[in-house]
Length: 161
Image (cartoon, rainbow, N blue to C red; front, side, top):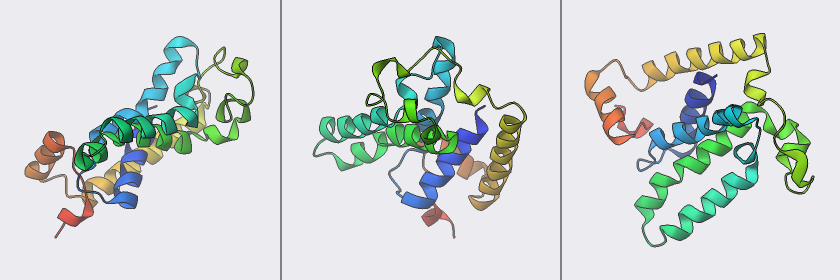
């Protein structure tokens, strides 16, 4: 389950922030990182908002005084938080409020992304439809735009004339 998280997070970030310095490749990375917890018996920290918030703080502190670097790397924690919204992680009280719900709340179960059955397929179809809309909206059929997106990670409405 990737399209729903990657496309959903990227489109949401572009529409909400419309920042020319935001690297949507890093948003996409942050959006799929929690899926990797399936390999370690998750959900673990990548499904908790605390990691996204700590990530935001770390980026702001490490790149203090370098606004463009901050804007670029904020994409990873924003993608993590976007994943949680699109995944409905907030509905799992034990994981969402970790560590307040106890340190044993994490792990030992399947990640929610792979436990939805047909619902997961519907979300992927929604990601595909949203991707088709974004493809047209941001004119990615144009090889120059596509190349610029892959090279710079920028995809914003301000560039559309």
